[in-house]
Image 1: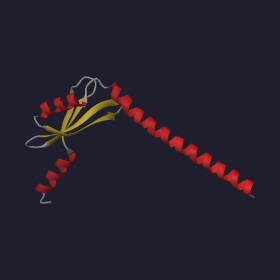
Image 2 (image 1 turned 30 degrees about the vertical axis):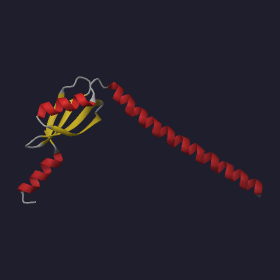
Image 3 (image 1 turned 120 degrees about the vertical axis):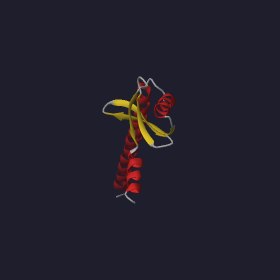
Image 4 (image 1 turned 90 degrees about the horizontal axis):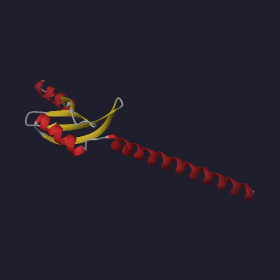
Length: 116
């Protein structure tokens, strides 16, 4: 009976250890993916922020690197005196891809106009 318990405990420990290694490996892979994506960029985050701020004549409040349909772009939220804009900057050439009013701000303004 004691032998069966020892074998069962050994098996459970082995399975737990294997699961922990698999989880750690997947976490490491995710970190490596982010590093690999960052290595593909030719424009730094600070350069993208500067381009977006100049394009909208405002101040950046948030920025991130995102994969959009296989293309890495910086998404920069820029606030000006009149509105908040979402500016997308190409990570390889630093050009503005698009500049649109921030959806959350546009929805909020619509609620105020409706009396919300």
